[in-house]
Amino acid sequence: MEAGAPTGYPVAFSVDYPDRPLNRVTTGFRIFVAIPILIVAATLGGEAGSNYGNYGGEHWAWGGGGAAAFLFFGPLLMILFRQKYPRWWFDWNLELSGFTTRCLAYLALLRDEYPSTDEEQAVHLDLWYPDAMELNRWLPLVKWLLASPHYIVLLFLWLAALVCIVIAWFAILFTGRYPRGLFEFVDGVLRWGNRVIAYAFILVTDEYPPFRLSP
Image (cartoon, rainbow, N blue to C red; front, side, top):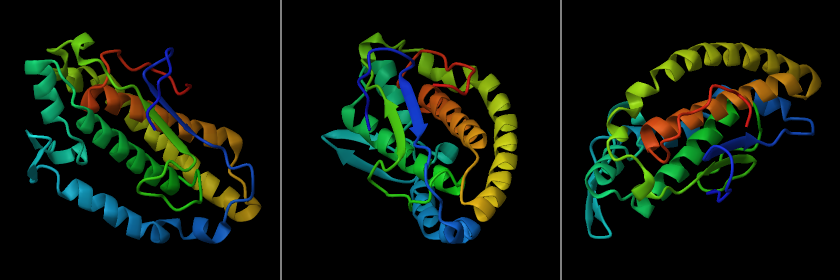
């Protein structure tokens, strides 16, 4: 899922528009159909803050609390004291972000393929692997705070997205199609959220997330 694109913001996200009739049965009962994969996702979040181990000879710890098992504190300390971002930490955060986003896209009715734990499917999330020597070593201490304006905007965007999802639910049940305009809006909200997470918690870029829904 990692991108190597030389231009644009270093976080790219998109969901392929399903140019075909969506499954009305799984759409109608989506919240119940999604329970097994949500349990899997919850086990990852439940382990946050309590697991310790040794990987590649280096001691590590999970990022705790509401970070949904993102490895946050380890990369923060590595960037702060050694200006390194170990590749395995990046790969974990990338894969976890992709899995989480596939689950969100499924719940948002954007796709009807059951979320895979390891395959990209039609949900594309690309993060640039950072050169830690080019990252500001002190900025990770305050990125979560600097991103506060985005949290406020995203709160209202997700409320609007929820309304769009409800409307799309009825549209799919009656027509089998997700209205294109609603799809692009929800897709944009997911894109915005992924950019903020990558900046404030995964710490892969110092470039402040743009205030826009578009790529």
